[in-house]
Length: 525
Image (cartoon, rainbow, N blue to C red):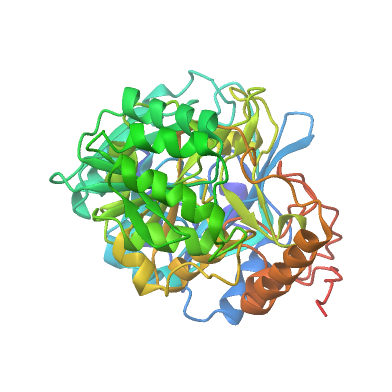
């Protein structure tokens, strides 16, 4: 140490005479600091040569930055780099389930002074605790993510960088305590549990009161498909205060109307006819509606947005679930899990994890930009497998979730101007979520709510000239409405990740280490 600090005045050294623990030692170092910003780095990290340049570059570009963090990777004892973690921009629910910010983090000195340094009660997760306290103090727009790898986490036998290592179990317990105390400070009643792997947590929020939930299910024909969906809800759902609203949409078969006659005998189920605008309250009305449907096509074709809007307007619940008729419930306490999130003032919508019948993932959240417009994350990976940093199994904030199972406050629909009926089939759920986020609300993906999804069984595929033309028009409408996120990238994804795949593959980017990435972006016509 003497060799270093005697040769370079920028290096300061103080012998404390005792081990004050991680928090105490770090606080002593902060007291010696004279910089405008204070950067944290672990003793088993390697700082990239260009790291401080990038930090100052970002501060100059975003002068209101109070806190900054970067991407990372790991480096082994043979200097092999791997496990690049390209992180999202600041996401509070993601942080509550994983310390994704991790080591190299930069605080404005005034902010650090407000936080009064580190607390010994959280040694082992002292940075996790201070990140939470930072998020309670700094404005979200003043938290800056630098999407570049600015440090390398060295992996060795005693490092927590080794997943499933038991070298520092105390750190995981300290992390759980950090989350619990953070929730108390911000007034949230949540239970913190272990996640799918070490270092990942799960937060379930307690339901307040007994609000009614309306489950809106669009349907055309397909009695057997709808029956699987409804039977699974009736048999498995543990939350009792709900109603099911089946929105009949241009069915042709007499069989489905016979089934409606059975459904309306259940006090929890209502059937409303989008085609005629009427509710079916009796067997006689069901027969009449069948006749009317086949005699006149008042609203021919399929417009998912219009059907959902109609069903929502006819609902009695304080909360609404959009649910496809070709789904089958797996999770019995699904409404409690989604309601706990959606009752928060800052949450606008909650989505679920859906599986194909072959036990692969159909939906684990949506990334805007994948495939050109938007795509489901981790599509077709094994149901019980793990993708990129186990994100498919972690509660996260995302830009969008699928309308195949989307839980929202009913008042949100009116607040954002309802679902866009000019987006009849494609991207209406993504657009709806984008409008929710535009109003300042969060969208949450909760993988602990699970469904089977027999995708497009009732609607069919986009394989006719008319459907293809409509689909192309919806692409253009989405591009015109949301050009900024399509050009700059989804804030809950990362510009270093490919838009050509749903499974978080790194794309080839040449970096010259002086702040300018050599990326040629395609400009939309």
